[in-house]
Length: 260
Ligand code: DGL
Image (spheres, rainbow, N blue to C red):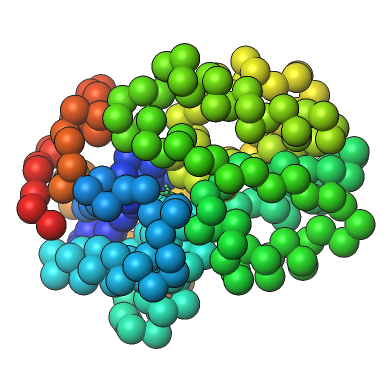
């Protein structure tokens, strides 16, 4: 048993979708969330830069006593998780675009994935896709500009709608029946996507699966918290506080600005 916190990091607010699932599925666990908004977006950066930022984020969380790290970012997971596992001894949980469930359920044999350039160009993404695609077609779309709009509080803007209409058009034309959200920021787009997509297209988002995996790794490593102890959630950002505090406004948590 361990009362130490779970560390969670992302290039910004995207990983909050995963934090919420962890809080719901593991209410006895304390968490420390690091939003590296100052360096967002990670997507267009090269692999070396993504690895360096991921190492820096992990060191920061481990210095604060975290017992397990959730890489709540597809771009960081697909580019850096192997190196993180080599460098640090704590367990890591990552998130990758959920190609497997989409491929297994697709009837039109065509699925779409919306993700960052860094994720779609990574070796890990290619390896996973090859495993499950077989005779299926995968329509890949880089979500250029989406993370920036979310980080600047323009989630429900007309610019966002225009971008999404442009990105979804080729997928709808190709008759996808599943759209995989391959970036944790895109979780917050679900209401708009549901409005823009034809009803026969289902959206796949893996935040619940990441929380389930976190729970089973904590149990396996005997790192779960003693349920009698009180848990707390702490948030740190090196960017603007407005967007993150807006997304957390109904939560009883602490948010601090840091230089990092
Ligand atoms: N939330 C990150 C992801 O899941 C966004 C990456 C970015 O900063 O471009 O990939």
